[in-house]
Amino acid sequence: MSEQEETQNAGAVSPALPDGIGLTLDDVRALLAKEHETIVPKDDPMLMIVTLLNAYLGEVDKLHARHGKALAALMAGKTDAYVKGVQGATDALAAQLSASSVEGIRKVFAEHAGQLQSLKSGMWYAAAIVAVSALVNVAVFVLRGVR
Image (cartoon, rainbow, N blue to C red):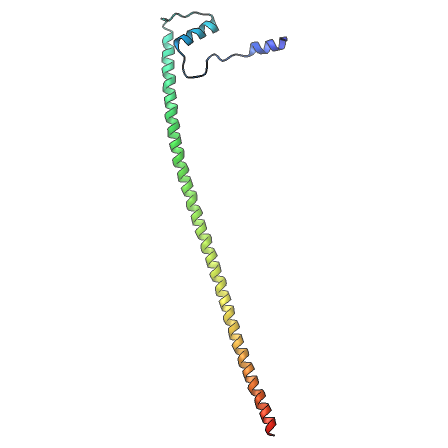
């Protein structure tokens, strides 16, 4: 190894605690012996702290689990309320758009009906003019034929 690698390895600190929650008394004694080169007897009062801290870690773990469940329930409730709100807004918007579309169609149909009525009136006037014109033509031919 080069001097630089040795310096980097010396600066790197290995994790003191293994993974998991809590340590047994034997684990603590072995850790103290390894890290501090100090042998702690089994009846040392200092090991009572380990028991207390392990109990504390257990309670914190239970509290985290309880809070996780409560948070999941809260988020589910909030999410359901949000989804219902969005669904209501979407339904209202769809109803408005549908009503607007139906109203627009009715308006267009009303305009077309008015135009159709105007066309019918115009056709009746044209038919009346054609009929009067035909009668005038017949009268002219008859009067010319009589003279």
